[in-house]
Length: 317
Ligand code: ATP
Ligand code: MG
Image (cartoon, rainbow, N blue to C red; front, side, top):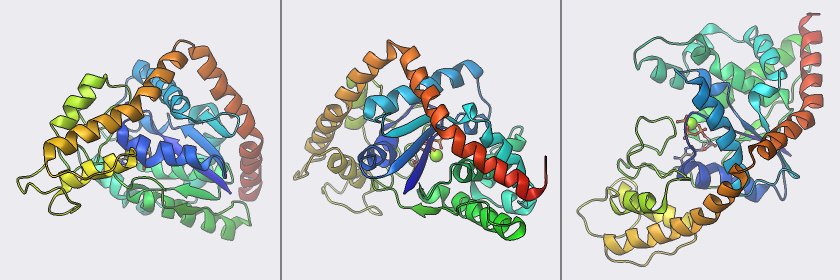
């Protein structure tokens, strides 16, 4: 089974990315053929700064390696380095309705924030469909926020196959094996997110230990004074318990202070080796780039073959 996962370099990777996507992907590399890409094209749908995008793309790849991605088993590449993504994107645009794209919740939410809206924000799910289909993926781990986009990818693939003949493998969405959602520690109603403004309540994988501890000790809880799982009544405490368990700790506390201390210890134990490996890898950005380049070379034949099939099917030269 070929599994595809993307990470957008819209900001710095955080604990939610690690527990929800990176660790499950790393655990699955034993059994699955995994493709992992840094989705740098997707980081351009909103205002972006070129130097920061360049830096975050390399940092994201470096952190994936630091967390345990094994490039001999998992193919790691940068989305923008594989032209087949853009080529297929256009061909799929010609098989997608304007209305289908415009009713995507993410487009509606992000375009309603005010300011100029890039056309690429509207076509984002079509590029995502191209990302998935171009590599003949079988499985795509998707959280609830990406479900609608995966469904669109499947709809477009099926339509294309029906209209022009069998061209694409139609993938299925699978539930990610890790933590469904790590919430923001300062606002447990919102998920921890890369692109959210400011970094309050977010634990960056490269944050210094003192900052991580402070963020956890200041986590918003409640006044009930009971340590138990109750996502509706006690979302803050529940989030701390989720993090603790995912980091290998066990909870048997009566006070919030003791719970937070245990979470801070468990998170630090999880992050310390990643931070150390990142520091080593970051000394040699040329090595990380060579991993990305080798990944591109490995995916090119399949990606180019898919584009060739699609071009022939629709009748372009
Ligand atoms: P953005 O704010 O730009 O959407 P993000 O933090 O949501 O960034 P993505 O690059 O969109 O990160 O997602 C990378 C992977 O991390 C996806 O598989 C996504 O489901 C997972 N993920 C993102 N945020 C969380 C979270 N808070 N808890 C668990 N998993 C998460
Ligand atoms: Mg996201």
